[in-house]
Length: 390
Image 1 (cartoon, one colour):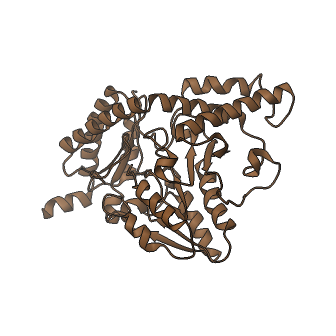
Image 2 (image 1 turned 90 degrees about the horizontal axis):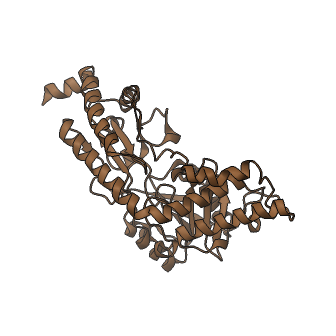
Image 3 (image 1 turned 30 degrees about the vertical axis):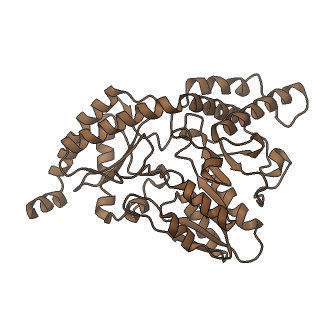
């Protein structure tokens, strides 16, 4: 059976060149990067080379990069770290469509007495920078707004928000897990003080990520142990994963424009084809600036989970939203935040393309998706009832 993968926002395959960069540190070059002998120094050299590569991808300085286990740890460290270093009453501003790694962290803060403002978004999934300005209080210590949404691909106006944060002398963090490696990300242009990324979203392995911390940022450490990474993140470094992350950063920096252009062309072709072939289908947040690989499409009258299963049986992998939320009974908080009623949120699927997606993959999708939708609609009393009322 032909199998096509369109769930790259959940995870990406490890690039062969990334695997090659990792292999020595899984076999012969097994030293601890904190050791002073030759084995350790070879590992240390790999870690510092990767730090240089990640910094170059972000327009940062190498000493501002701290390696972590992934986006969730980076988000937690940024948010808890800033609030923990603040003195007195603290207030945090975020949005209603953040990833659970941010939302659940903010909810934990609220239980400890920290005030959190959750800003709404418009129908395109965009937060109004002026709403951020209006939400500021004298006790505000942090603004955390994701760069690109994992379900919609919507790109937030971070540069404007960054200027507001700087004027207010408030720290600004962004979860850039879904933007790094897909669109240009430059920390100085965005005006962020902290930025989270995860390797497995751009062809590095799972279990490794990074947190950019602007020099001078006051951040309470979360973990205690040795003095690794200037004390920000103690513990023996994951040298194979870090080496892979560095190689993935190099590849992304060199191929970013070409890959973005090609995947956007394919994404647009997929969207147009489905709108033409599936009655009533529409693209969620179509008018917003989006990452070039992400399409979130509503198929009225269906249960999204059923369509995901039907498509998987036909050889096409996609999702109803964030992989971290799969199995959730409630509809997507992102889609309800942009104004979709629960039944439409549940009828929306995310297709996220990747570096290796081909035109043949798009043609395959345009063949199997309309057929699966038609088949499920025939079985749907909800869709039949809607059809009868028209």
